Image (tube, helix red, strand yellow):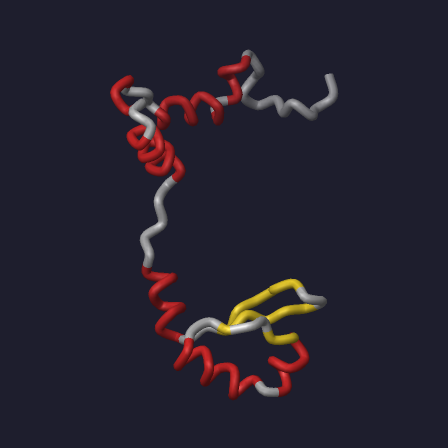
Length: 100
């Protein structure tokens, strides 16, 4: 379906909701740029039910895809060192933006 201008979507909202339920998502545009979609409840529930992967799981999946998973790189430890302020030689209670 072609994108529907936002003012038309506002004026004919029940029609476009019905269209979303029967035909699929309806793109809504402002100044010829798609800014939103009207979707059915079923489509929304499908999208919301997808399990979210952690960034570590995503990185490990990519490493397996490219054949790099055999080197036992521990992302958890790596990210923990990035979070640890003392790792870079700073005092734990001192912020990098504090004046000396």
